Image 1 (cartoon, helix red, strand yellow):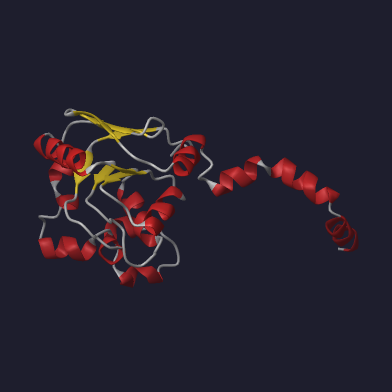
Image 2 (tube, rainbow, N blue to C red):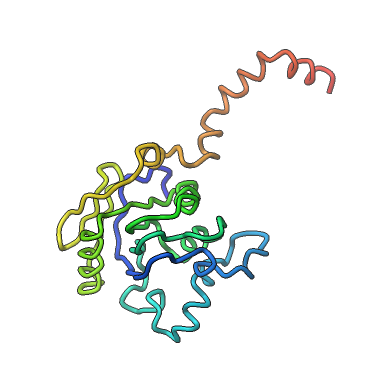
Amino acid sequence: MSAKRERITGRACVLRGDDIDTDRIIPARYLRAVTFEGLGEHAFEDDRRQAKGNHPLDDARFAGARILVVGSNFGCGSSREHAPQALMRFGFEAFVGASFAEIFAGNCTALGLPCLTLAPQDLARLMDCIDLDPAQEIAIDVTGRSVTCRAGTLRASLPEGTRRQLVEGSWNNTAVLLEAGGAIESTADRLPYLRDFSATS
C-alpha cells in the first residue's frame, strides 16, 4: 500500500444498516491477539455465522471488494483499533458512508484508510448502483473529495486535516519519523544533556 492515498479504485461491497459497532466488526474474543495477523478472517464473524452465508462479506458478488459502503455512525462503540485492522486485513482499503464514529475514523486514518461521507440521498444512490452492478469499478478521489460510480460523480466530505495527511502520506507515523531521521539526529547533537549522556555511556 503506497503511503500517499490520493485515489482508490476497485469494486465495492454494500453493508446496509446504521450504528454498526466495533463489537460486531471484530468480536471481543479476538482482542487477546498479540498481533493483528489473521484478524481479517474474523471480520464480522458472529454476524456472518448468524446470517448463514447471506452476509455481504460472504456474497460472491462482492468478493475481492476494496471499498466498503456503509450507513451512519459506522464503527461506534468500543474504541478498539482491531476493528479497522480486521477490515483492512480482509481486503478493504477505503470506506464510504453517511457518518463514522470519530475514534474509528481516526484509527482508520492512522492506517491510511480513507473514510469519506456522502449526503443521504447520494449514499442511497451509490448503494443501489452497486447492488445493481457489483462488478463495476468505483473510484474514490481523496484529493478532490468525490466518489464516482456508474450513476455519476458524487461529492463527498472528508476533514481537511485528514485529507492532507492521506494525500501527503503523513498518516504513516513511522515513515514520517524515518524521513526526518537526519533532522532528529541533528537536533539531538545540539542538546547538551544528550551529548553529556552519550559521552558517559
